[in-house]
Image 1 (cartoon, rainbow, N blue to C red):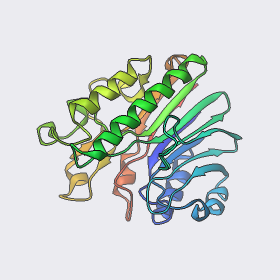
Image 2 (cartoon, one colour):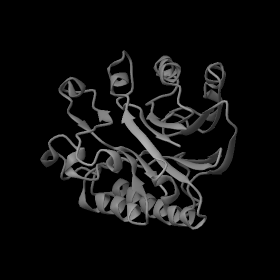
Image 3 (cartoon, rainbow, N blue to C red):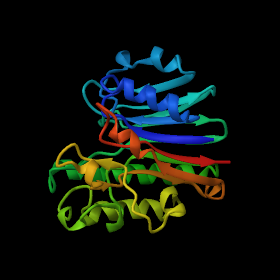
Image 4 (cartoon, helix red, strand yellow):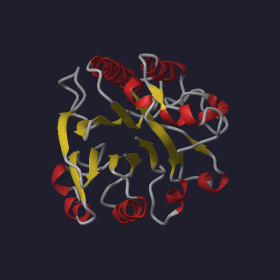
Length: 256
């Protein structure tokens, strides 16, 4: 099974890019973030025309996540991260595809930091960590993938000294990510490429993509039952170079 995650940065505005990428790479499952569209505006017909089923959790103008599966049934398990009934952001969607539980997430950005947005990010991280621990208890193959808005190490950011005060790189945010991983999750990209320079995001400004001045903020965390089934992983970096594209590149893994 090939599973991909892609922050599309507006599913309708970037729809030609999304469809082109789906048709070119044909992932079995694709997790999308930042739909920036309410539920009724999700482009289901265009996605179904390529053979994909879909579930989604939309929100007007902001956030939004979706899970697509090609010629496979999607059994929705959860929409929304537990732990805060007042949190109405559309940032988490969970489903079963074949024998794999897939959590698609869009973690808060947290800037400007310090401040209430960073506090919300850290609180969301705590809720994710609590939920992730419960998922591990089920002893099922689980993938938690999406835009985590964190660069775990200095290897994951171009010129890390420029990011020390940013909410994507602050020590407490990186600590939250490492605390989550330490539950027993495997960072798929780093499992296969422990020392390679790999980015998943390039800003629209200052020719970041042309200079390869990027960040690795889109991650796959795999439960112990999937670590041995991981066979390949990568980033479709060239998609970031397409016209009217997202500032993220699609990331993917292959499992047996």
